[in-house]
Length: 219
Image (cartoon, rainbow, N blue to C red; front, side, top):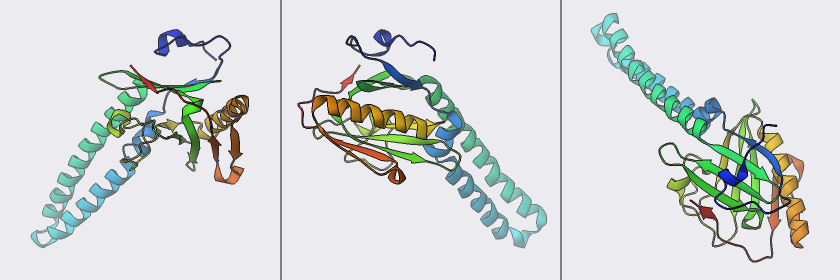
């Protein structure tokens, strides 16, 4: 694994003894299909093109083709824009899991660092797609909140009231989830916190940390 200089990555120095367990960037295609809903957008414009063709059928075959082509052209342009956004989001993002924390560096125009010590993470949930890609979402302890718009697209969808940071577009989501799950258990045991490990079928790990937590750092 290539060395990462965490002193440059994190907004604070790493304590002695902390180790990098995993680091990586999102897969832009997985981000394109997951966070940017490319499949739904493509389906919408296909349905729109079909509807336009049917609606124009009374004017002849040429009118049908033109109506459908117009809708599909707009759809292709929309997908191209979303693909560019997904590529830029993936290229500028970096996720790091250490033995003590999760770090997210996100933002295209403005880079933002989120430093999330394990003591602030109440649970981590894993969702894996059929192709092996997926995401790990982090539920923070009470009182620790990061704005949904500040996180997007790296936030759990539709959780606006209580936003959850998400490592989205992971190419090997299950491997990342297992690494984080083991690290959370080890860290919780070291703090003397109660740990509940969900069955493997649920692909989630929950920790109840009975400790005083520090604020998440954004810089």
